[in-house]
Length: 44
Image (cartoon, rainbow, N blue to C red):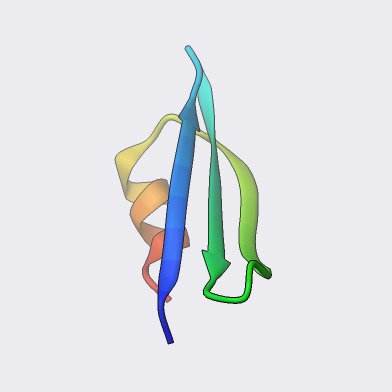
């Protein structure tokens, strides 16, 4: 199964969205601008 992601970057936070190949949202989270946190969200 394929996944696609997008990140909407703002000055102090960003929104991470991951969808599968059937356009179902797998992840939709607003998080602080922190690389470690972003990697934790995307790891699974």
